Image (cartoon, rainbow, N blue to C red; front, top):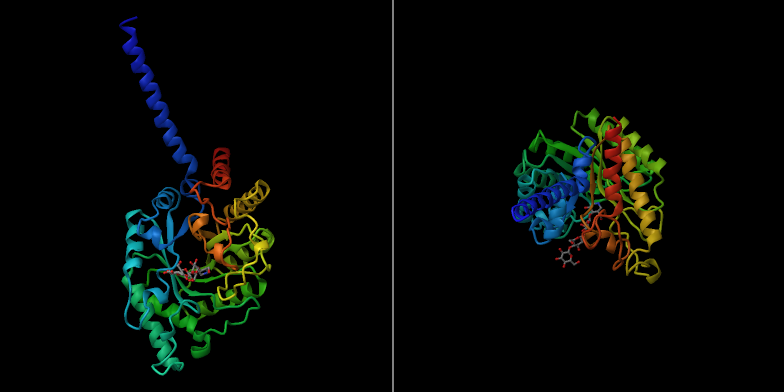
Length: 382
Ligand code: G3I
């Protein structure tokens, strides 16, 4: 027995070691979205500056373990990257790209031309008057060329133009549109392509499932192609609610964009768990409303029934994406955890929303495992 005891303890130690080693490996596999979805589409997330600079370590762990693609939530917008004419601030964007490269992530740039978050100097002269069409085109060209060429070959795709079309299919009356006319869009695509001929180029919009906007986006894609310009994809932002759009409406939009001969990208996915003041709330950030207590019902956590309904809704959307993975190249969440989400302040400031795949405690929501398991079952059936 004296001889056996050390042998037995050795065996026991080995059993414990191999069991925990297996368990660790098993857990990683069980929780990796990127592994489960690797034959379907890229799975991405938007990064804020706390992520980019490694301050939010728990979120960064999720990013490296779960996602294979990133986009900058804010730091590449013109008001941050060129706050004053000719003075570019690249620190955050450089760090973002460096982080993506170090972790082997597919990097998307967001966004070159957008009516929102463009600094006033872009459109005005030294007397505060609107600049001419020629001046604005020159500023646009300089902005796009400087930013895109800095990350040539490193940023793989760009949201070139963001949100230029309204729900009824008409052009948004932005400063770009008013001063240049609708060809500001084709010019932006042309400048981006000249700066990095290998980069993919996208048009990106919200409420992308509205038939009027959807059909106008398809017209735009066709007209860019007819002009011989490069456009690789349509970004369906995917700022969605619990009861809008219907899955049929969303499927129809995916089909319509795909049949225009471009990749479909779900670029900014989140599903608000909160009551929405309107069905078409979308993401027009000028469209905010005053805070109302009754519209902020879950400040102490989601009731089980709402949480189940939310997970069901997100699961149905992912099922739709997986079933259409021949058309969809990437699905990107607009943030890592619920605490990060812009939805906590839109359309009303100061609410507590639950729109993302990971909660405020950095815990994966049940739908994450469901997505992974569904794909495992499908694969083992093959
Ligand atoms: O960085 C400043 C900080 O210094 C300041 O103290 C604080 C006070 O408000 O503001 C901070 O800036 C905020 C910034 O996000 C970073 O958190 C801005 O006010 C706020 O307007 C900005 O909101 C962003 C919004 O775009 C406008 O740029 C959201 O985070 C971002 O999620 C949202 O993303 C857009 C997409 O780019 C395009 N599609 C719609 C989507 C949602 O609106």
